[in-house]
Length: 363
Ligand SMILES: [Ca+2]
Image 1 (cartoon, rainbow, N blue to C red):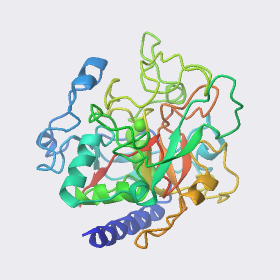
Image 2: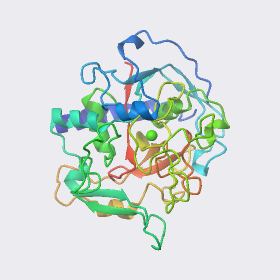
Image 3: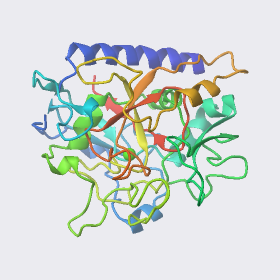
């Protein structure tokens, strides 16, 4: 079952990458929307505020029965990828060319613990963190503790999706929170189980921008009253978190208003895997050794996670793009709570601030 999943998965991924590169990896916000003929099949999730998200079970209606359960239809259009207001690796293509985007469906929320539990129950899947014996967990420095870049990341033995802080933790009452400590491989297995894919970076960014216009896309997300409209870090990272957004860590899915496409938490909460390899710029100027600031990535830690016992899992520290930023993104560090922002992540590194959502590509 697992090998079959893998083969299917990587077949799909390879095809996706081919299409992606054939399109030229370019991108704008000039999408042309059209109504889906079968949009009625998927009942939109009624989330978008603190009360609704706290009551959410974590399972969309008809999940496991309707392949579009909990998904939103995104009509075809064009994407102008990147931003001139962000980091160097976000700069748009010099040619200014746009990337055509075919219509697709995308999860309205990050995949929740409840959804991932259904996958594990149905398949017996064992995640990479369970095989390797742990994962990278964020721990805020204690008062007076010396701080250096990435010193807030700790390898915690026994940390995995079911016990995200180690053996004495659990996901009890966290069924509606996004699953974390999952590798790209884990995310792909889940996606394939549903007949879905991971989004390409272009698909993800197109869905996140939702035809929005700069400069609002390049600012920290706020509502009309000035309150944070996503789960990110307010205060002085990593020592002081004012929690103006109500959360110090991961929040339940859908606590903030959806974007114009009906998608929750595209910005913030947890970073999200894509199937796109990371290069240091959209121009494919590959320089994987010149990382912007190391946030979200830690090659030394990835090496320490190299599986000793598992012969079935290939170690793969290839860098892939993650999108959207997380509860750890702050104005003074990792200003990546923006649609154009991107970051490299080691494919097999399970961490406490990376999750994912899936897409359903139309045949
Ligand atoms: Ca997110």
